Each structure stands twice: as C-alpha cells, then as structure tokens.
Image (cartoon, rainbow, N blue to C red; front, side):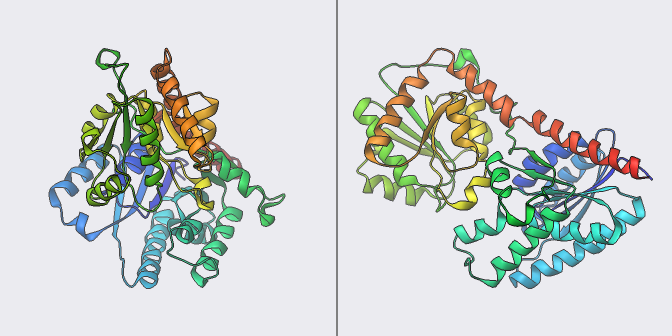
Length: 406
C-alpha cells in the first residue's frame, strides 16, 4: 500500500475562484512527496470555458495532483445534491480500492457525506474539514428554519461527522470551544486543529516606499460584499463619525455588483458622494487600493453560525499593513484584533461605542510601526505556509497511525 496516498473531495469546483484560492493553493504544496487524488464538482457555466479549463487542468497536472472532475447539479435542490453524493461515493470507492488510498479529506458537509460512506465501507482515515457550521449558516441566512426537516437532517449528519472523524479542522478556536459543550462529544472529543482561511500574502503586501500619509485626511477602506451578512449601515454611521473628527476623511469602497444599493444607502445617510470613491477592480487593484488606506472597516452580523467563520478579508487587510475596525462575535476576529493590537473590535453599535471605536482607530492607525505589526500578525494567523504546515502534520499523524496499524 502507498502510505502517502490521499483522496481530497471538494464540492466547490476548481474552475471557480474559491476552489483555486482555498483548495488548489494548499494542494499544490501538499502534493509534494505524496499522491493526491482530487474529486471536485464543476458548474456547467465554468466547464464550458475550454481555455480556462485547459489552463487549470495543466496547472493541476504540473503540481502532480490527479484530478477527477464531476458535474455539479443544482436543481431540483435535494435530489440534485443526492445524485452528486452518489456519484462522489461511487468514484471515491473506486479510487480508494484501485489506488489503495489511506486518507479521505472532505471539505465541508456534502463531501463529508461521501467521506463518511467511504470510511464505513473501506476503513479509510477521514478528515472532516468543517469550514464553519454549515447547517446553522443556512438557518441564519434565512434558507432553512431551525425547526425544519432539512436542518434536523443536516445536524444529524454533523453529529456523525464529528464522532467518526479521525481529525477535525475548524476555522476558529471559538467554534472548537462551542463544540466542546456538545452533549454527544462529552468524553468523545475528536482531535481538532484550527486552520483559518488563508490569504495570498505574496500578493497582499505593502511596500514602505509607497506609503503616503496626509495627517489632515483619512482614507477608510471597505472591500467586498454589502449583502445581508454584513451591517453596511453601521459602517456608514462610523464613517460619518470619522468625518466629524477629520472633515477631509474619505471612504473608498471596492465592490462588485451592488453599486446601486450602495449609492442608495449613501444617499439615505446623507453622505456627500464627493467624499466617497466607489469602484470595482481585480485582485491586483484591491491590493493597490489597500496600500493607500489608513484603515479598513467591516461589520458582520453577530449570529450563531458566525462564531465558526474566519473572514479572508481580515488577513488581506493585515497583510497590506492595514489595521481594521470590525466587531466581536465573529470567530476569533475580535480576539485577534484586540490581543495583537492591530485593530478595534466593536462589541455593540451604540453611538457612544462607535464614536469611541473610531477615535481609537485613528490613533492606532498613526502609531509607529503599525504596518509592520499588522503584517506580522497576518503571517502568523493567515499565511498559506502556516496552513500547509498544519495540514502536513495532520496527514503525517494519520499516516503514522496507519503504518502502526499495519
């Protein structure tokens, strides 16, 4: 048996940006010295782009990864997902038996249904890479009801995943502490490792020579979505408070596809559009913009599922040397900001609390050495190298257990 052979299952496609940044970025390095088979589920609209598909496929082959793409089915929702699970189990079983694979690494819940079946059928080691409390996210997002059948089924599967896993990966320490209180895990806790979402810190970085500071102005940055998971109105309230302290302050918003809503909210809050720059740009443009910001800001709704979330944008801001104003109740974010002194974590949204937070943010952004401190914290918590090292340790531990068992 090849004791370095691993099956990785992702319900996200490798032709999608998320698959490339949060799966392939890791696997290319993890494939060094071991054989990795990758099952992914590709969306039809991505698959028809032949040029992009061939480019990604060549990149995967060059990394030594053996790719087994399957089609993603969307409708009807439950039946389509069930069919994908059957296809994944069938292909996975053939790969495990044909290539004597020792570990199945499942990214999130749907792949874990496949992985759990493979473990039960073959005895293969199983890594449950949670990526958050998926069932609770669907309730908090209004897609399911907490009293509904789908939620109960998903939570039942979550219980089986946690009890059967040989190793569990969580995005946050806060989620691990929560799971330690689950009744069914008392005296049955699996091995846990906390690995946050990585940021491309080779891209998201700053250069001292390019930093320009104007003491009488302040450039506050907002990057990404303003959808229902975010508290955008509170962001605009903080910006208005910032303008009371620094009249020349500006708000730079980088966003795709939601400009009409953003303009409507700016008008509602009576914010002069002359003090706001709203644009859509690519990754390189985001980095250039971040490097000219004095601070970043974003607030995420404080719902139950968010204790297991690790927003990638925090690592990107810090990688560029930018301190942040955010909120508590979202994974380990508040702890990192305050403990490492690289940002302000707002506990509530009263006007006095927001005013105090904005004042502290201004002072923090002007501290000597703040950019280097932010960069150091990004490297410690959000670097790809850190994540790869932790995954390597998990694999080596499970493979060592397998060798002893044989």
